[in-house]
Image (cartoon, rainbow over all chains, first blue to last red; front, side):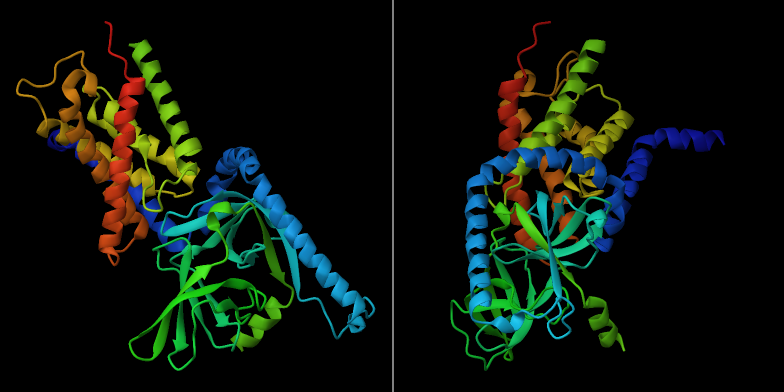
Length: 271
Length: 171
């Protein structure tokens, strides 16, 4: 017993190091593996308070840009309304219309923290379960896609950013509907990789890439980016570098997409 | 004694705030992310017992993790760096050891010594942190590049802080 105590005393420095390091490493591994969804509720509320005060301050710096984008979007929406009113009266059915049922529902939220320099980047939003947000919902901004919600607490949401090695979404070429998968290679926060497009497809620099709508997370046709360069790799498929429309350094307001028919769509897939 | 204890608590708070309020919000390049908070481990007195060093490293890392939403990554890297510190101090020890009433800093031991001491610990910390974050050795060299650039950047800030914060002691 005495020897044991002596031994412990002699190596207490290393043992304490080992003890603390194992706690930290196991926390880190769980964070890496489970995408921190389970940890969100634990600390998010504390950190969110600080982040919110920081971002309420930094919001002022992007005010000009945000206003410009909002007015731009207003104009766009107004234009769409005009078009619907004038030419396409078919859309004016009653409220209980069964032919043109509303499929998507958007909720605006503010970004209270965001990173672009890590390999697994996340955003936090200032809305949560109380405002109807659930895990696995798409997040977009006026420019393009942003990410997918993963952890939700009462009033906050963490979003798996497009700039995350675990992010994958189905996307297609706008001009001819060939589809592939968008993912991030961790290199540059301005570009992502589009893969699985067969080599015989004609691709030119500047072609627009949009979401395909196959995944039930994003609506079809949400802009992603433009083709920057396309090379054929391993003979059969293109490896396309896509320049993102979304500027992840200047995100302030985003929209969370609720797909009203998601459950139905997934149920069919699982059958 | 109480006075110096207060001074270190104050340093802890200031360094953490500078890290989470300022440095986490500016990005000079997409590679370089300065983690100035390691500075707190560097400036602790030579006499700090090992167990306290480890516990302080754990606390420091946990605080940063809380703000950065990276549960465990910074804690693991900081505990690792704290564990290395006594060994690194021994390697770079002057011929007749460290004198009492001196502190690890440029004012007491010169720029050359401080540069060696600080860069080794910062590099070890960043190396652990970045590879643990990527969680794979697949992109080994691009990660290494990020480690090196960030180390240089942190080191610059640490040296800068020496001139701003550490006034020569009058006692």
